[in-house]
Structure formats: C-alpha cells, structure tokens
Length: 351
Ligand code: KG4
Ligand code: ZN
Image (cartoon, rainbow, N blue to C red):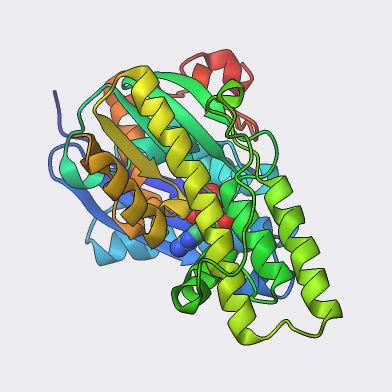
C-alpha cells in the first residue's frame, strides 16, 4: 500500500481545525482555533457567527499548517472533512472548502462522520485499540453508547432522549452564572464544593430504561433549587461550589452506570470515552475506579484529541481513503443529523 498524506478539516461546531495525517508516519501536526470568545456573551454557540468565523479562519489555517510543517498542498493525496453531524452552515464551510481545494488539485475529497472520528481518536496515540469495544461519546450535542464490532461496524445501543451531557453542563453553568463553556466551569467549581449538601436525581436508572439517558429533568431540578436559594438570598460562592459538585456527581453517576451496563451486556473488555465531556476529570477517575476492578480497560484520548479537532478527521479520512471510500465528484454533501449507524451507506449523505 502506498504512503498517503491526508489533510483534515473540522468545522462542525465552534472549532476551526486543520491537520495533516500520514498513513505511515502518523499525525504530522494539527491546529485548533476555538471560537469560545466569540460566543461567550451569548451563553452558547450562535450558528451564523460560527459559520462566518470558519469562513475567515479556515483557508489561512490550512496555509499556516502547510507552512509550519514544510509541506506543499500538492503533496496532499486527499482532503477529509466533517460532513456531519453538526451545524449545517458550519459544516457547509468545511465541505465547500474541501471540495473546491480537492477539485483544483485533482484529488479526492472524503466526507467523514464526526462521531466516528471521535471514537477512532484514541488510535492517534495508541496506534491500535482492541475491538470489539463499547464507546461512550459525550459532547455538547451528543450522548451515545456505541458498540464497535469492528471499524465501520457501529451499533447505537444507547442515547439521550433529550439534552446531551455537555448541554446539561452548559445549561447548569449558565444558570449558576459561570459562563460558557459550562463543563470546565462547573468542574472547576466542583473541586472546592461538597457533595453531600445538595442531592440531584439520577434519571432513567430503572432497568427498563436500560442504556438510554435523560438530562433535562436534572437541569430543571437545579433550576428549582437555584430559584429557592435566590428567594432565600442564600446563593453565595460556597453554595455555587456545592451545587456544582452535586450536579457533576449526578451526571457522572448516570454516565458511569449506563457504561457499566453496556460493557456487561455487550460482553466486551474495553471501553473508550470520547467527546468534550470525556475531558471531565471526575468522570475519568470514576470510570477508572469502576472498570479497573473488573478487569475492563478504560481508554481515553488525551484532552487535545477528546475535544473537537481535525487530527481525528484526518485519521478517519485516511482509513476511508485506504478502503477506497471517497468522493471524486466533488458534490457538496453534508448531513447535520447523520446517524452513526449507516455511515457507509452513501444515501445517508444524501446521494
Ligand atoms: O466534543 P466537543 O468539544 O464539541 C461538540 O459538542 O462536538 O464537546 C463540547 C462539550 C461542551 O458542552 C463542554 O461544556 C463540554 O464538552 N466539556 C466538558 C469539559 N470540557 C468540555 N464537560 C465537563 N467537564 C469538562 N472538563
Ligand atoms: Zn465533537
């Protein structure tokens, strides 16, 4: 098999990211520009602003990456980009850029599924991971449990019925006046908080709810508690830390319990945790504690590959390129609600 150089582009949400991945040497370099500051005042991602910012950042970032790595665009064999799921305008920027560049260079473009990329991200560091495994994919937009039988064969075995875990952190943070993004802010406050002052529900723990999640009730419960504390003029810094701790514990408990059930039911001995919430230290510690006791390997990408990045897109694109799955017609295709279960079906991308 020949050695291939893949340029990866990620623009599905509020990170503009680029990467170069070599089929033999591995990751050459990757860069991420976060739009957090742009969206901070709004308490969440504003889709229109996200798209516009991707437009202004993406081409200069590709130029810089090539310059810094002393590569020429003509060395690139294919361009992989996130085609979904994500925000449609933001995805379109990556798709149009990738396809226009690929067309001008006469090389293929490769649409990549963002969540598949998240679950293959640990391969950026370890080179290989034992399959089959269960993956817990937890980000701002998704909370999924996926049974990975082999690369490309994914079964969705659990998901949230309402808010994603990251969204639950973000909404809580906004309620507590801690700003955006919420996960890191709540996690930081939780460090100094006590866990036994407040108690939040652990929704969907009944056996009949099996592997699904629900986080919207948890957020409502926090809202009632905060309103009551405000009425009593008791919402001080110490209280915010205690609330953050108890709320984080509730989310972590739900994620750990459902992961434990999934690993048992699928009878696997490896779990991978990926997506932005996978950066949560309390979740990492608890997963390790629960699974190491029973001989299950817990595998996380390092934080830089846990949150959105293009290294995972270039890596996934490289696999697809080597499997011969690519786009030589330069159709601008995206699917903001692309399911992880039928990613190898071309119709799932609209044609
Ligand atoms: O995967 P990601 O970078 O972007 C997508 O949503 O695709 O995930 C972002 C989410 C946000 O909701 C953010 O609050 C959450 O991940 N997050 C965290 C932490 N760091 C980021 N949640 C909990 N603890 C963290 N340390
Ligand atoms: Zn993501």
